[in-house]
Length: 300
Ligand SMILES: NC(=O)c1ccc[n+]([C@@H]2O[C@H](COP(=O)([O-])OP(=O)(O)OC[C@H]3O[C@@H](n4cnc5c(N)ncnc54)[C@H](OP(=O)(O)O)[C@@H]3O)[C@@H](O)[C@H]2O)c1
Image 1 (tube, rainbow, N blue to C red):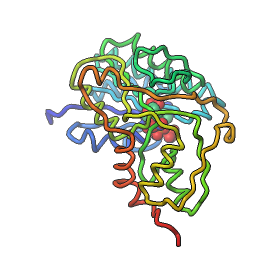
Image 2 (image 1 turned 120 degrees about the vertical axis):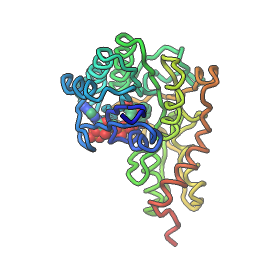
Image 3 (image 1 turned 90 degrees about the vertical axis):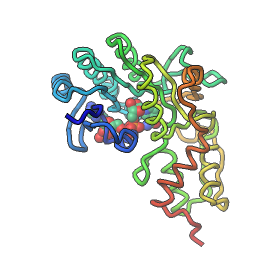
Image 4 (image 1 turned 45 degrees about the horizontal axis):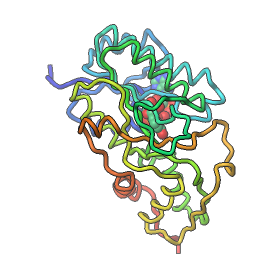
């Protein structure tokens, strides 16, 4: 017996999962994923989920497994609901049966997006695409089945380093490959969330025993265009032209909310964890993880 706390993680092979070992380095971790890592676990398999959780006997279950490709969710709703709603139900039922607190990472994509002010936990969710509906269904399942849960809604996720396939990684690669001008959408708003900061916040939160629903993102409301400008400045590549365009220039299968910006209202009021600004987080991410991997110097 190590006496260390134990946590079972689903979907640990993804972007957020890539920081778990670092942030929870003093925990005994059972890292599971559908394809990668030591323990293969598909959360759509209720029997497998139950036996994995029963045999591990963790102090917490951190549920990261999800169908996160928003456009694929729109085109393959069965995949979205089976993974994000029914998969979450399987994890929640096993946590209920074995009396284990569950941490469910949800999304700012549960909001319709017409509000100017960043959304807080007391604003009514109303998703505009299948991904949002399926993640909200997951929230409702967790809430209805468990007495001890943390639902943590994150904003636009930043992270992944050299394997970053999200917006920040894409812009860095376009810059590194010598593209200019780069067109970036300027009429959609959100709040960046550095995955490492998110897990630090989760770590702080689970110490409190204040179960419930939380927003957890870095601070600020920005457009993709603002982020691209910041990346260019941090990389010292002012030679690259970034052009603001309307989202109509890049039609996508799934609708995107005009604003997915959130504010960590409850964390602020409880004085639990003050997340740094999105710009500080972005700068830290680029300096510590991206600039080593991607050469962004001008090609001269
Ligand atoms: N990414 C964002 O912008 C964002 C924003 C807000 C909230 N979130 C939430 O944050 C959590 C973590 O997301 P992330 O960014 O780390 O996403 P991610 O990189 O897509 O990671 C999710 C992981 O879950 C795995 N997975 C998919 N279906 C599974 C299944 N049936 N059983 C077990 N594992 C499965 C994925 O494997 P494959 O890659 O092989 O499918 C992947 O390794 C999710 O709940 C997501 O909804 C994400």
